[in-house]
Image (tube, rainbow, N blue to C red; front, side, top):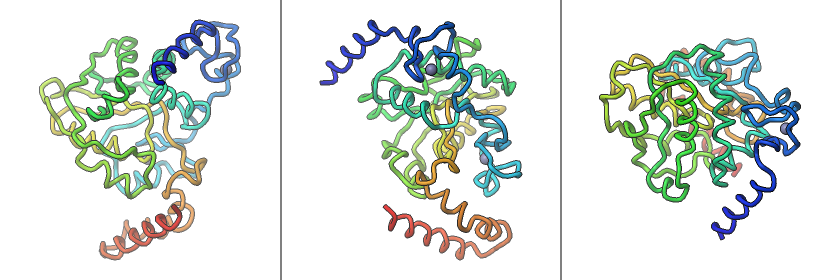
Length: 289
Ligand SMILES: [Zn+2]
Ligand SMILES: [Zn+2]
Protein backbone atom coordinates (compact mmCIF):
# COMPACT_ATOMS: atom_id res chain seq x y z
CA UNK A 1 0.00 0.00 0.00
CA UNK A 2 2.80 2.35 0.97
CA UNK A 3 4.57 1.54 -2.25
CA UNK A 4 1.49 2.44 -4.20
CA UNK A 5 1.20 5.71 -2.31
CA UNK A 6 4.82 6.57 -3.09
CA UNK A 7 4.35 5.73 -6.76
CA UNK A 8 1.16 7.72 -6.85
CA UNK A 9 2.91 10.73 -5.28
CA UNK A 10 5.71 10.48 -7.83
CA UNK A 11 3.17 10.30 -10.62
CA UNK A 12 1.39 13.37 -9.24
CA UNK A 13 4.72 15.18 -9.04
CA UNK A 14 5.22 14.57 -12.76
CA UNK A 15 1.72 15.75 -13.56
CA UNK A 16 1.95 18.75 -11.26
CA UNK A 17 5.61 19.57 -10.73
CA UNK A 18 5.98 21.16 -7.31
CA UNK A 19 7.89 24.15 -8.71
CA UNK A 20 4.98 25.14 -10.95
CA UNK A 21 2.24 24.56 -8.41
CA UNK A 22 2.26 26.46 -5.12
CA UNK A 23 3.11 23.93 -2.38
CA UNK A 24 0.95 25.85 0.11
CA UNK A 25 -2.35 26.28 -1.76
CA UNK A 26 -2.05 24.32 -5.00
CA UNK A 27 -2.53 27.35 -7.25
CA UNK A 28 -0.32 27.98 -10.25
CA UNK A 29 2.89 29.92 -9.57
CA UNK A 30 3.25 32.89 -11.91
CA UNK A 31 6.56 34.18 -10.59
CA UNK A 32 8.99 31.38 -9.82
CA UNK A 33 10.73 31.69 -6.42
CA UNK A 34 12.85 29.59 -4.09
CA UNK A 35 9.93 29.05 -1.70
CA UNK A 36 7.71 27.45 -4.36
CA UNK A 37 4.90 29.76 -3.30
CA UNK A 38 2.35 31.73 -5.33
CA UNK A 39 2.19 35.51 -4.89
CA UNK A 40 -0.86 35.29 -2.66
CA UNK A 41 0.73 32.77 -0.27
CA UNK A 42 4.00 34.72 -0.16
CA UNK A 43 1.93 37.64 1.11
CA UNK A 44 -0.38 35.78 3.45
CA UNK A 45 1.40 32.78 4.97
CA UNK A 46 1.18 32.75 8.79
CA UNK A 47 4.60 34.28 9.43
CA UNK A 48 5.59 34.45 13.06
CA UNK A 49 6.43 38.10 13.50
CA UNK A 50 5.16 41.08 15.42
CA UNK A 51 5.18 40.69 19.19
CA UNK A 52 7.09 37.57 20.21
CA UNK A 53 8.67 36.26 23.40
CA UNK A 54 12.24 37.55 23.46
CA UNK A 55 13.50 34.14 24.60
CA UNK A 56 11.54 31.36 22.94
CA UNK A 57 10.02 33.34 20.06
CA UNK A 58 6.40 32.32 20.64
CA UNK A 59 3.66 34.73 19.59
CA UNK A 60 2.60 37.10 22.37
CA UNK A 61 -0.87 38.49 22.76
CA UNK A 62 -0.17 40.84 25.66
CA UNK A 63 2.19 43.70 26.41
CA UNK A 64 4.72 41.55 28.26
CA UNK A 65 8.13 40.87 26.76
CA UNK A 66 8.26 37.19 27.59
CA UNK A 67 5.78 34.34 27.52
CA UNK A 68 4.54 32.78 30.72
CA UNK A 69 6.53 29.55 30.17
CA UNK A 70 9.80 31.51 30.00
CA UNK A 71 8.60 33.64 32.91
CA UNK A 72 8.27 30.52 35.03
CA UNK A 73 11.63 29.17 33.99
CA UNK A 74 14.27 30.71 31.75
CA UNK A 75 14.87 28.36 28.80
CA UNK A 76 18.29 26.67 28.48
CA UNK A 77 19.15 28.37 25.17
CA UNK A 78 20.10 31.88 24.03
CA UNK A 79 17.16 32.45 21.71
CA UNK A 80 14.68 30.42 19.70
CA UNK A 81 13.02 31.75 16.58
CA UNK A 82 10.59 30.22 14.11
CA UNK A 83 9.50 31.16 10.62
CA UNK A 84 5.80 30.37 10.91
CA UNK A 85 2.97 30.03 13.37
CA UNK A 86 1.97 26.39 13.39
CA UNK A 87 -1.36 26.71 11.61
CA UNK A 88 -2.76 26.00 8.17
CA UNK A 89 -1.32 25.58 5.60
CA UNK A 90 1.94 24.94 7.50
CA UNK A 91 0.31 22.18 9.58
CA UNK A 92 -0.58 20.30 6.43
CA UNK A 93 2.94 20.66 5.00
CA UNK A 94 4.56 19.46 8.22
CA UNK A 95 2.21 16.50 8.11
CA UNK A 96 3.35 15.77 4.57
CA UNK A 97 7.05 15.86 5.46
CA UNK A 98 6.50 13.69 8.53
CA UNK A 99 4.11 11.08 7.23
CA UNK A 100 3.84 11.57 3.48
CA UNK A 101 7.48 11.19 2.39
CA UNK A 102 7.22 14.60 0.69
CA UNK A 103 10.93 15.24 0.41
CA UNK A 104 10.48 17.93 -2.24
CA UNK A 105 9.18 20.23 0.52
CA UNK A 106 12.42 20.37 2.50
CA UNK A 107 14.21 22.77 0.21
CA UNK A 108 11.54 25.49 -0.11
CA UNK A 109 10.71 25.29 3.61
CA UNK A 110 14.33 25.44 4.70
CA UNK A 111 14.83 28.39 2.32
CA UNK A 112 12.27 30.22 4.43
CA UNK A 113 14.13 29.20 7.60
CA UNK A 114 17.35 30.55 6.09
CA UNK A 115 15.71 33.97 5.84
CA UNK A 116 14.63 33.74 9.50
CA UNK A 117 18.23 32.92 10.46
CA UNK A 118 19.39 36.05 8.68
CA UNK A 119 16.51 38.21 9.94
CA UNK A 120 17.49 37.59 13.57
CA UNK A 121 21.23 37.74 12.85
CA UNK A 122 21.96 34.31 14.25
CA UNK A 123 25.68 33.67 14.25
CA UNK A 124 26.42 29.97 14.64
CA UNK A 125 29.20 27.55 13.77
CA UNK A 126 27.50 24.21 13.59
CA UNK A 127 23.97 22.85 13.06
CA UNK A 128 22.57 20.07 15.23
CA UNK A 129 19.21 18.62 14.16
CA UNK A 130 16.91 17.30 16.89
CA UNK A 131 17.37 13.52 16.58
CA UNK A 132 14.69 10.86 16.14
CA UNK A 133 14.71 7.51 17.90
CA UNK A 134 15.99 4.50 15.94
CA UNK A 135 12.48 3.07 15.94
CA UNK A 136 10.96 6.20 14.44
CA UNK A 137 13.76 6.44 11.89
CA UNK A 138 12.99 2.90 10.75
CA UNK A 139 9.41 3.75 9.88
CA UNK A 140 10.01 7.28 8.55
CA UNK A 141 13.32 6.54 6.74
CA UNK A 142 14.57 10.06 7.35
CA UNK A 143 14.70 12.65 10.10
CA UNK A 144 12.75 15.71 8.98
CA UNK A 145 14.80 18.02 11.23
CA UNK A 146 18.00 16.68 9.67
CA UNK A 147 16.66 17.17 6.14
CA UNK A 148 15.81 20.80 6.93
CA UNK A 149 19.26 21.17 8.54
CA UNK A 150 20.98 19.89 5.40
CA UNK A 151 19.41 22.62 3.24
CA UNK A 152 20.15 25.25 5.91
CA UNK A 153 23.75 24.07 6.13
CA UNK A 154 24.17 24.32 2.37
CA UNK A 155 22.54 27.78 2.25
CA UNK A 156 24.56 29.18 5.15
CA UNK A 157 27.83 27.31 4.70
CA UNK A 158 27.55 25.62 8.12
CA UNK A 159 28.54 22.07 8.96
CA UNK A 160 25.99 19.62 10.34
CA UNK A 161 26.57 17.33 13.30
CA UNK A 162 23.86 14.68 13.25
CA UNK A 163 25.66 12.06 15.31
CA UNK A 164 26.64 13.96 18.44
CA UNK A 165 23.36 13.43 20.20
CA UNK A 166 20.91 10.53 20.02
CA UNK A 167 17.40 9.81 21.16
CA UNK A 168 17.63 6.82 23.44
CA UNK A 169 14.03 6.61 24.56
CA UNK A 170 11.31 5.77 22.08
CA UNK A 171 8.61 8.13 23.30
CA UNK A 172 4.96 8.47 22.50
CA UNK A 173 4.23 11.14 19.94
CA UNK A 174 4.30 14.45 21.82
CA UNK A 175 1.36 15.70 19.78
CA UNK A 176 -0.89 13.06 21.32
CA UNK A 177 -0.16 14.20 24.88
CA UNK A 178 -1.24 16.95 27.24
CA UNK A 179 1.20 19.46 28.69
CA UNK A 180 2.26 17.64 31.85
CA UNK A 181 2.47 14.27 30.15
CA UNK A 182 4.73 15.83 27.54
CA UNK A 183 7.16 16.85 30.25
CA UNK A 184 7.26 13.32 31.68
CA UNK A 185 7.35 11.65 28.27
CA UNK A 186 10.44 13.43 26.99
CA UNK A 187 12.50 13.43 30.20
CA UNK A 188 15.91 11.77 29.79
CA UNK A 189 15.09 10.86 26.20
CA UNK A 190 18.34 12.23 24.73
CA UNK A 191 21.97 11.35 25.25
CA UNK A 192 25.13 13.17 24.20
CA UNK A 193 27.33 10.75 22.23
CA UNK A 194 30.20 12.88 21.04
CA UNK A 195 31.30 16.09 22.76
CA UNK A 196 34.30 16.97 20.61
CA UNK A 197 32.67 18.51 17.52
CA UNK A 198 30.50 20.77 19.73
CA UNK A 199 33.00 21.97 22.36
CA UNK A 200 33.56 25.72 22.15
CA UNK A 201 31.08 26.04 19.28
CA UNK A 202 27.98 28.17 18.77
CA UNK A 203 25.32 25.58 18.14
CA UNK A 204 22.23 26.07 16.02
CA UNK A 205 19.66 23.48 17.10
CA UNK A 206 17.11 22.81 14.35
CA UNK A 207 13.64 21.28 14.60
CA UNK A 208 10.47 21.29 12.51
CA UNK A 209 7.90 22.36 15.11
CA UNK A 210 8.17 23.75 18.65
CA UNK A 211 5.08 23.13 20.73
CA UNK A 212 5.66 23.44 24.46
CA UNK A 213 9.43 23.49 23.98
CA UNK A 214 9.99 20.42 26.16
CA UNK A 215 11.85 18.52 23.41
CA UNK A 216 14.18 21.46 22.77
CA UNK A 217 14.83 21.94 26.48
CA UNK A 218 15.78 18.31 26.95
CA UNK A 219 18.08 18.28 23.95
CA UNK A 220 19.75 21.51 25.17
CA UNK A 221 20.29 20.02 28.60
CA UNK A 222 22.39 17.27 27.01
CA UNK A 223 24.12 19.58 24.52
CA UNK A 224 25.43 21.83 27.31
CA UNK A 225 27.47 18.87 28.57
CA UNK A 226 29.63 19.29 25.45
CA UNK A 227 30.55 22.81 26.68
CA UNK A 228 29.47 24.81 23.64
CA UNK A 229 29.71 28.61 23.73
CA UNK A 230 26.00 29.04 23.01
CA UNK A 231 22.89 27.26 21.79
CA UNK A 232 20.35 29.00 19.57
CA UNK A 233 17.25 27.31 18.21
CA UNK A 234 15.61 27.63 14.81
CA UNK A 235 12.39 25.88 13.88
CA UNK A 236 10.07 25.98 10.93
CA UNK A 237 6.99 26.62 13.06
CA UNK A 238 5.92 27.38 16.62
CA UNK A 239 2.51 26.66 18.12
CA UNK A 240 0.46 29.70 19.06
CA UNK A 241 -1.50 28.56 22.07
CA UNK A 242 -3.96 31.41 21.98
CA UNK A 243 -5.07 30.29 18.54
CA UNK A 244 -5.26 26.64 19.44
CA UNK A 245 -7.59 26.65 22.42
CA UNK A 246 -8.19 22.94 22.47
CA UNK A 247 -4.64 21.95 21.69
CA UNK A 248 -3.18 21.90 25.13
CA UNK A 249 -3.82 22.43 28.66
CA UNK A 250 -1.57 25.45 28.83
CA UNK A 251 -4.29 27.52 27.33
CA UNK A 252 -6.57 26.68 30.20
CA UNK A 253 -3.96 27.56 32.76
CA UNK A 254 -3.34 30.77 30.91
CA UNK A 255 -6.95 31.71 30.65
CA UNK A 256 -8.26 30.66 34.03
CA UNK A 257 -5.64 30.94 36.69
CA UNK A 258 -2.34 31.81 35.14
CA UNK A 259 -1.88 35.01 37.08
CA UNK A 260 -2.60 33.17 40.28
CA UNK A 261 -0.20 30.33 39.56
CA UNK A 262 2.51 32.71 38.44
CA UNK A 263 2.25 34.65 41.66
CA UNK A 264 2.52 31.47 43.61
CA UNK A 265 5.52 30.17 41.71
CA UNK A 266 7.26 33.51 41.92
CA UNK A 267 6.70 34.27 45.57
CA UNK A 268 5.69 31.15 47.40
CA UNK A 269 8.19 28.95 49.16
CA UNK A 270 5.49 26.36 49.56
CA UNK A 271 6.37 24.10 46.63
CA UNK A 272 4.07 21.35 47.88
CA UNK A 273 1.09 23.61 47.43
CA UNK A 274 2.10 24.35 43.86
CA UNK A 275 2.55 20.66 43.22
CA UNK A 276 -0.98 20.15 44.48
CA UNK A 277 -2.25 22.80 42.08
CA UNK A 278 -0.48 21.12 39.18
CA UNK A 279 -1.99 17.80 40.20
CA UNK A 280 -5.43 19.37 40.23
CA UNK A 281 -4.87 20.65 36.69
CA UNK A 282 -3.65 17.26 35.62
CA UNK A 283 -6.80 15.62 36.94
CA UNK A 284 -8.91 18.25 35.21
CA UNK A 285 -7.10 17.54 31.99
CA UNK A 286 -7.75 13.80 32.28
CA UNK A 287 -11.44 14.45 32.79
CA UNK A 288 -11.49 16.44 29.57
CA UNK A 289 -9.99 13.67 27.45
ZN1 LIG B 1 -0.31 29.60 -2.90
ZN1 LIG C 1 8.96 32.27 25.84
